[in-house]
Length: 572
Image (cartoon, rainbow, N blue to C red):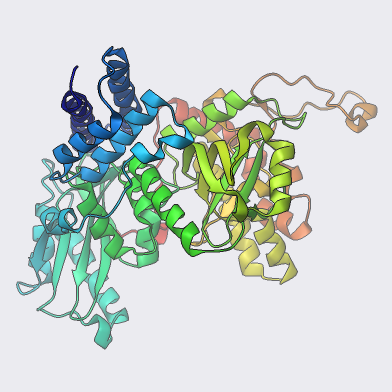
């Protein structure tokens, strides 16, 4: 390996192999869906996450093995840039180069000059190639039938005519609600549908937009299979906020054939502009690109803002210290140097549990995270009290370097309102609706995680957050574990009264033992909260409920958890 061009070609070949493997998994998703192989669909989704790191490591090992020192990274970068300039996935190829470089040379502060900086390329982002346009001139029925027929499935429909009628009624209802000069829909209007089908969990999704006379609006059609393996339309969603939930940071990555990711991102961003490009890259499985896009966007925001990093609102954690920039919707989570004596975890265990969440089906109830090493932030933007706090509780993870705070390891996560603050606000304002919603969503969150084989562990209200769409999400992962690893038990009756009054439990507690009756302590803080919780989710306080769900999971049952409400589903 004597020339810079050979090194560049080696990196590009590694990237090509990664992309081919990534695409093959997307193609495999169609067969899994059609054959109702839900477990396999989850497995290939998890396997896809590891593809990137494995291929980067393989290329880095090969480069490290070379004894030739006559080439420079700057020259390799120049040759590589020429090789990938005309590709439809240039931004991914450049990020792959960055990853290889960091793996070979180390992820240190001085490496920035050798890295590609993500940027939007107008010449590569025309999204016309990824969708098909359907005219309404032939009528809504014919148009919708063509949309469904073009999905390319090799299985029968349960009742396509019924489904088309459902969609027509839904369209009429939505258009009536949008009847205004800005949203006129008529026979001159048309519909664009992305050619690739999006797969996740037990559903397939068609994603598109309606082009009215003056404006566009999005729609998503959800397809499911019945017990006979026949296809049917479960619902349609066109409200931008609800479409945003489908692409939420709390759900697993879609499996979708995306030859030109930047075109997908442009199309989706036009539909749901409140979603950042980083979140959209994450949603279609390119989480490394999402990380690169987030970094670029955040650095740009730092240049354009002046507020200070501050401790995040809420009760201080026993494992993590958390801070935020008020003008930007994320939090930064750093592992503390020392944990509370009540926490039986280590730094490595915490990392393993965050990796578990990354690979697992998050079921709409676990926040996705981006992991950074050696993240540099301007020291002048940090509140002095926050700097002192970081020095006291996380000195091993931070370092001050010439006006920069270097954070050696950190997770970045979407900022949410802590549930304890949300409920306190509801009580203070006597807002019964908010209180009911918060407690109900809290119980549903725990139940949906259990159905996805996740036991949250520490279920205090402070460890749950409320998204801008009002969904309750769990975000404290240091005690998370698989439901199937838990041993759910009743609390034994005390043999004499003094045992019940003792500071320590009078019964033995083994590894993995869980006593659901103790969860009652979570709601004992307020009479109103306790009443609503017991009314809606009192079954969570019994081992029997947990054992039943555990049995279902152990038998391989994949529970239906979809990103829309039950009442939105069409009547079959």
